[in-house]
Length: 210
Image 1: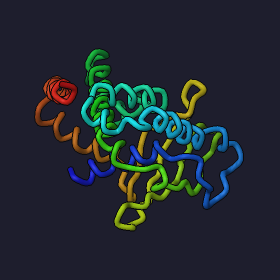
Image 2: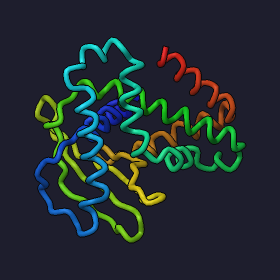
Image 3: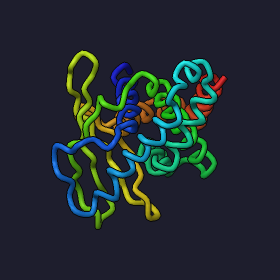
Image 4: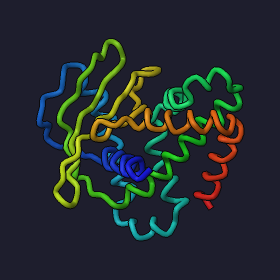
């Protein structure tokens, strides 16, 4: 799952992007929407970690609290959790659905937190936004320049939910990490059952937070 780990680290960098010049003009209706979500997350995160990287490397609880404060209002936990569960969503109880949604979000939180301290904001450039704002769906395209000079295309899928644009998927080099996790967990649900998968996900989260 090295590729998946790299993807969530790139997601962390994506949420750190500042208001950089666009290589492509934004479509009407998007300037105050999806792109603003990414930029605001960047500004808030950079303010929170400025001058504290060394401290936050040692204090995981403080780091995760910062990440949670920035990420939670901008990530569509329910949409991601339901999509990852796929057909098993219909088989799960309401309690199991909520437990899986929370566990998956905590896994993202940990990945984002681990990656956020390793990158600088000038490594990413938003290149444009596409989609239909009237239908409540958008894709923000960007490019990430890695430290070795490699340029990696990264796109964020967002939907308009209850009046707010929220991210529900990230696509790195053409690979959707929502789809990657859906395929991974479909196998685990099939082999272990819904409750065991949730128990293991929660145990991993408790271990990460300790």
